[in-house]
Length: 313
Length: 128
Image 1 (tube, chains in turn yellow, brown):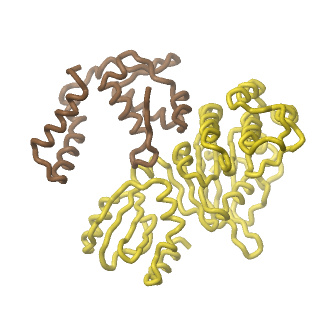
Image 2 (cartoon, chains in turn blue, yellow):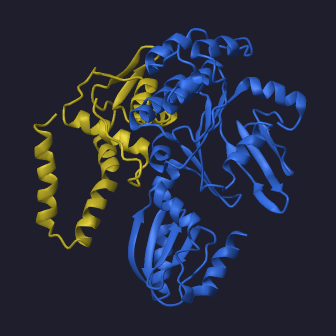
Image 3 (cartoon, one colour):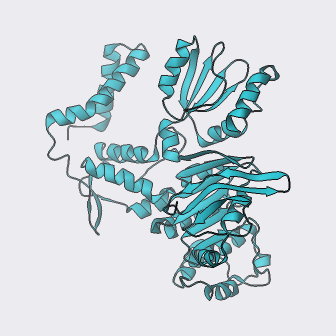
């Protein structure tokens, strides 16, 4: 477990009767750029907060850099080595970027004074304006500057590009690669921008209703994952084994295969199916198939709908 | 170097990189001794994980398309040394098989398929 930058084992969090995170098992390799994806309220932020000791897990355990965030002494050491960019950046509104740098540098033993002027110039960060007066994009840049200069081994970014224009997103991505990932350091980010994730991330985890539906290396998704569209009678209607998701809109069965798509197609043909298409599947399509599978069923397939639901519970 | 990646094409990014470098070399856009950007620089330029670039470079080096000088950069290698003709043919055979299979699937004639390959050879210009 400690070989991973971040690992969780059956991690869970309940708020009263509401299950926010259920039996979560994450494995984030050192040096990975890991995209943690899910709809609003899927449990992404709660998970991040548990990893940072901001919220206590109700069950299971977590390790970040081999340290346990729910143990006080571990947490202090962990927070020196992990930087977090929350969605709402709660830095002092009255302080300028330059003042924030002065306040922060004393806290972190690995602080890089060399990096500050370099990033200020590269990202064109206004350092003399009060944080509260900055645009959203510039607030993100200041927060990123503080996080990178901290010399953290893991950057946790909660929706880092929300509200940024495309040029700012592009600059941000370049900086993350150049000044963090290139040193073998890890990024764990949550996002809804699937095309950005597909670009910069090499691992993805997809969470829905607190449960991890998929964790995969993106190069494997590109190489192995295929969408198989078939028509026929009484074809398999639920996910199992290599079948990551199965949906039926009344006319066509759609299967997302994690591997062996060709062999599966041969099996389907053996059951009298006509194969309409076997095609690669992009991250957006994969995400939609996984998290929206209930909605794509027609009312006439109520039984199969239950089968889908039970295959993940 | 002009590289274009399509992250959702169903082809792993390291393979896209390998193919594009090979193509640039085959088409003469990259010549023996030309320097390639460092792993770190190319990764930043393409906004992808340096591990992905490193994987492509390692494979290209193993195939003698490029060579890296420790601490001194990465360069286009001078041809494919030390490979027997039979080994070269063995390496190309799966690609030839795929062209044949796909061509047959599309009901193209033998002449049409061969013509296609010849056209691609034409595009690359004279013999190396």
